[in-house]
Length: 432
Image 1 (cartoon, rainbow, N blue to C red):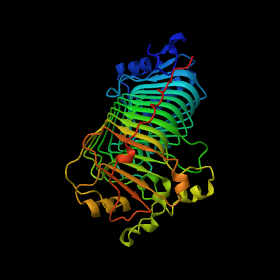
Image 2 (image 1 turned 135 degrees about the vertical axis):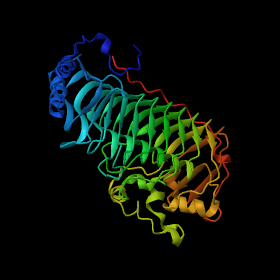
Image 3 (image 1 turned 90 degrees about the horizontal axis):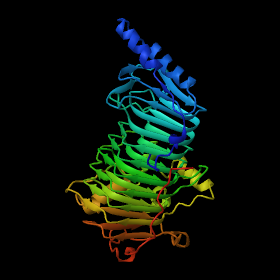
Image 4 (image 1 turned 60 degrees about the vertical axis):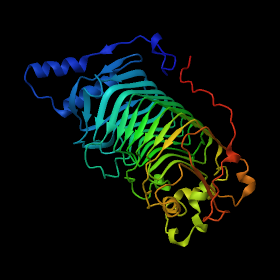
């Protein structure tokens, strides 16, 4: 077994639970209808009866469910379907609960080989879990794409040792995958599309995001720290991804924090430390390719031209208030390393429903820079700790916008960013 597999299942005795498959097979052979209530009872009953090392098998088919499934206070169990195209859990007529599947207060849980469609709220919620693997999972919505409750495909909070492999998340009002206050996580070989944000990493440390496709979202990926939370994140490697055509409008209500970033953005990094972005294809994101920013710039656009002062996203938000109250919060970025990426963008006008994208549209028309740095240099002593390196990127253009420079002549020289930063350590999920 590959050592990157986060759960050491090779030493665990595994019992395969075929009870549900046998039950449904007998009913079908006898010509009896299988009600959603019976399916629900069988799945939840098998989970509750599972012992460490057990695998709960879910059969193929479009299985209708009417209430949330939960895994609570359990260790080393697997919930396994027959493949995300074969086992489909439909929550289109969900009667109880918001999320489809909740995993909490557990350890070394594996979810594999099934799809979740059309729950009332989030598709999968993971909280306080030490060791979680999602493999060959698809989560999303096939209808009613404006429902604000359809917030996340996968929501993970306060968890460690996270592996998301060969998955798909789509049509989430907020993010396809949203990981908060967690550490040691890998997202690989997955597809995120038609979400407000493909992948959001918030206040989380030690992440690797590689060999994914994030396409047709409003924002491909967002990595940032917010004030007012228990922990602050650092360390993220983003490499060998396709981040392209992220040009839909943000689906979420205007009060959601992802409206802080312009739609049409490939990668957004804000108030984060130690980020390496390399060997990615960042293509045809209509507003900008990579956006690096400190929190201060976004929340205080007081020096921007009067015509774009109607922005109400950050500086009147709860997050801005929390930043003022949270004395431990560092609003600046530090050690951002962007190298060996390929940028390409067809001539097209940026979105104009965000103050930054309007600014870019005004100055650059249909050809805004591929990398945009925004920072507030009003407090130079604090901003001195930030660093950015830009080396060996193909077809790259750059602009720096800050509150001390005249906006009609922003700096575009990258000479001072011609530097190297030490490589980040690989993320290890395997624990003895």
